[in-house]
Image: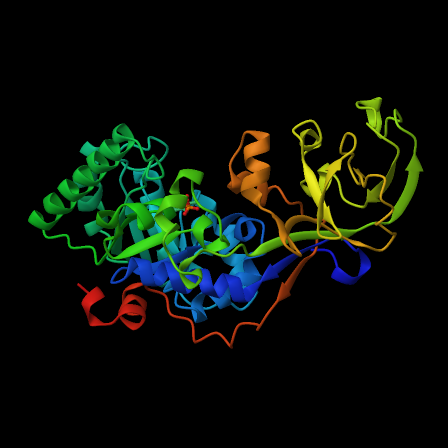
Length: 412
Ligand SMILES: *Cc1c(COP(=O)(O)O)cnc(C)c1O
């Protein structure tokens, strides 16, 4: 990641807001424990920046998508359980074990590969078996679960700790979506009963993403896997109602702000057409500011035509032409109230105004997840607020952490 001081463009990561959101989701989810999902470099925030702060704010552990992300966290000194949500490819199994990653499993081939790797490394591995209850992306087919667990039981190096699934429409507020989620949870609980009848009692049962944790209490089980809410964004705009009555302390707070500054300013006549393609004439004579970030940094080229704005001097200003790879131009109007060196906020708060990732998502026809993860590696991530306290000693399983995080009631 680039050095912060060499570029005025930066993503500021507010660790106090992050801790607030982690504590809030942990509270909402209790007695279930909280797993902070920090895949995709912490949804663009910098996984290493937020990992330990999540643990000291009350998360029982972390989740990433792939083994490499888990290794990167261990190399950054992060202790505590790390669940890898995607089953490791055969040649990643050994590294997953060596780095004490908790491994998702859902295919016989990966089961065998993990067992072979455990034999080579000479230690055990802790696994969370995933079943597909309706997301239809990855996970065991319903009729394959019993056979899979029987096979797992013949491999003493592998410990079945978790059993889990993933919800497809937990963010949907409509009847059909709510029914589908209920159907997924029914199916999940059916599997749990069938497993119990065969003597399998996984201690960490989980299904909920942020939307499940917030809107479907039944989906919380032992652990919720929350991502987007911890970054201060709702899984879906319609979920704002859930937080509408909450006190300020009960509201999610945005964690990331994307900031830069004016590096050039020119005065153009009405009708001038800044940037590539000369797409739109200025409606009036204006100061036009140049800001040093572009689509290679995660500001989509389309944001101009979609009506994107930035904040300068606490006021909203329209992007004035096509966003280029490294720069964009802003219509600062006729008032002459902008100068070179002024701060520019693309996402975040400035004075009384704020622009959220959700606002970009609405304009661009996408979701805030894609906006946040789109912020490129060239943008330095700069932490604000108290850094994380020293990480506790590494432990490999989730079970003891669940007890520590939520008390004996969670250790069912
Ligand atoms: C990304 C992911 C999550 C977190 O989802 P959010 O909607 O960001 O809370 C949880 N579980 C799985 C399997 C995921 O891939």
